[in-house]
Length: 260
Image (cartoon, rainbow, N blue to C red; front, top):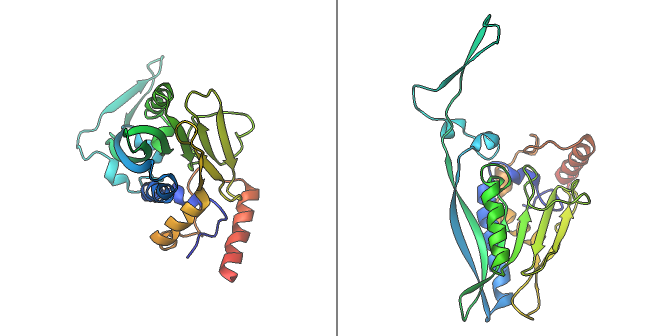
């Protein structure tokens, strides 16, 4: 079973995203490895990120509210009183547990020296909002300063992008390539109606770039993981909401898929 969408399936941006993230990193490493061998190797690295403010993704990436709400009986209370002291309001605010999330990264290394040449980051919602956004932007700077290429795959519509430009602000998804020691960032920007681009993965020195077919990677993980069993396309896609024109297009897409 394949996704009804020609490119990125926005229904994957919800609670399925952690699984999508891990599988996509794995298949990217698998697809690239034979193209860069034997001089380079593609390896998966995992880092743990603590999401201390997961509230924005409760009901989206964290569907089970009970998982992240504290079980502590005594919750903090905040009292608000008017300046005239004529009324007051007391609000009980539930304490939200931090959520530890594993973030996979594809690293291309020079086999002889084990030197990191290119990092392929698949952005998580945690990377695109506080408090995780700032550390991620610092990491981008560090990679640039040490001469590492950075390919960022952003398939999450919500949150703040690490790269901004007026020509791409209305696009749903982007892939950003910042080459080592280069002040320019190349951006592939596309919408939910588009197929994903074939992007370039740079290597060291004068070695030529290799191509990564992002659309093919997503098709492979969708089929292998049988995501259609976990998605109800009659429901709304994860936030942010699409406009009326896009929703009409989706309904036609689903109807044609069912007729096929």
